[in-house]
Every structure is written in C-alpha cells, then in structure tokens.
Length: 303
Image 1 (cartoon, rainbow, N blue to C red):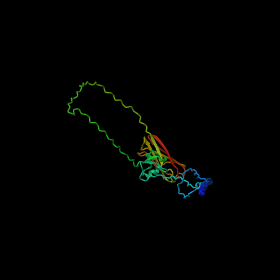
Image 2 (image 1 turned 60 degrees about the vertical axis):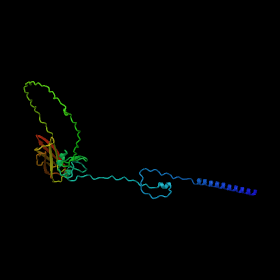
Image 3 (image 1 turned 90 degrees about the vertical axis):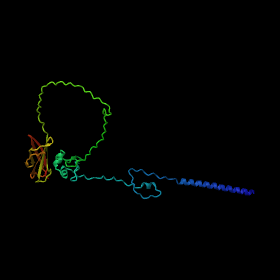
C-alpha cells in the first residue's frame, strides 16, 4: 500500500512538471514571434497643394505599400473659358429713347437704323456729325419710344374733424356786438408823374455755327455735300447767306451758295473730280448774320 501511494505521488509530480514546462515553452515561442516580426504601420500620404481630382480610380488591393500610395496619379485642373458675347445691334424700327453706344457704332449707322437723318440725331444731342462717339455714351433718339411713366399713387387723406357750431344743441346764441366805425375824409393828393422806363440796349445774341460733310472718305468724281447750321441762343436762324471755299491741291473752288432755312440749316453740293486720292481737302464755311461773320471748317480725304 505504501508503494502504490508513492507511485501515484511520483506520477502526479511528473505530470505537473510537464505542464509547467509546456507553459514556459509556449511563452517563449510568443516572445520570439513578437521580437522577430515587429508590427509595421503604414506611412501617411504626403500633403498635396491644389484641388484633387474626383475621378474614378481602379480598385486597389487589400494591402498597399507607402510607395504604391505615392504613385496614385492626380488629374490636373483646367480653368473654364470666359464666355464672350457679340456686341448688341439695333433692330430697324425698334429704337429706344436713349441708346448706349456699342463698339462700331456711328451717328450715320444709328440714323439709318432708326429711320432718321444725321442732322436730327446730331441736333438732339448737341453733336456734330464729324464728332466720334464714345463707347458707353448715352445718346437720345428723337423718334424712340419714351420710357413708361408711373402715375403717382394718391395718398389717403385724413378726415377733417367736424367743427362745433354754436346753437346746434338748441342753445340760444346772442349776436355779436360790432364796433362803431367813424370814417374821416381822405386828404386830396396831387397825382404823381409816372416815371418813364430807362432805355436799355438789347442783349447780344450768342450764335454758334457747326459744319460737316456727307462723306469723309468719298470716291473720286463723287458728288459731295457740305452742311452747316447756325444757332443763336439755341434757336435756328433763317435767311443767313453761306459762302464756301474748297481748298483743292491745284486751287480753290466754291459751290452754289445758299441761305439758311427756318431751322438754321444750309447746304451745297460740288463734284470733287479735282481732288486727288489721299490729299485732305479743307472746306472753309462762312455764314453772315446781322453784320457778323461766323466761320467753321470741315473736310474730306478721297480714297
């Protein structure tokens, strides 16, 4: 019986020693795996400047290295083109009352589209046909449609309070006592002499003259007209004679002189066969009114 007990104790002791040995071997193996294979962390992606394209990329594998992440292409961005619009042009018969000058507009072109003469547009805007228009300048079209006006809205009036009338509640009212006036005769006065107005010299009129030609770059042997306008105090002067002098390269000529009409306009026409191509011909215009000569110049260059 003692031998059997000792044998059991020996077996239990041996089994316990084997279990302890196995536990130590397992711990050593785990430490070896950790030391031999350290945990690796993926490096962060480098920062990029500028917008990143949101295009579709091919599906990547479950695990990528930092080198593969840095090789992902980024599509460049392009600026959108700036849209351009063609300049606005007037439609015939649809001219507004005020028109904003666009690139390429001239007084002659606007007058043709609106069915007017050059003189009507020039007179409505205090311009000369030889003046160039500025882009963005507002000019008045005499026959254009007026902007719509809005009628004022009447404001409500506050009712006046009803005045109280004496006696309205059947209360007797005594008549007011009027003071007695005593009239005394007015003294007789001698009539005063009415002073005569002092003579004053009439104010001198302020007159201006403007001149232009029908074509600044005519063809050779063309009939060319020169126009002039005389205004005194901004009113056209009629019956004033005009004289012209056309300074050609080979000598001076003149056209049939006329007189201004009731609006102050006058013109004459001359064949420019004596003009040479590329030579500027100056025209001297003189209008005489009430003994005063008003002068202006215009000209043209034949093609």
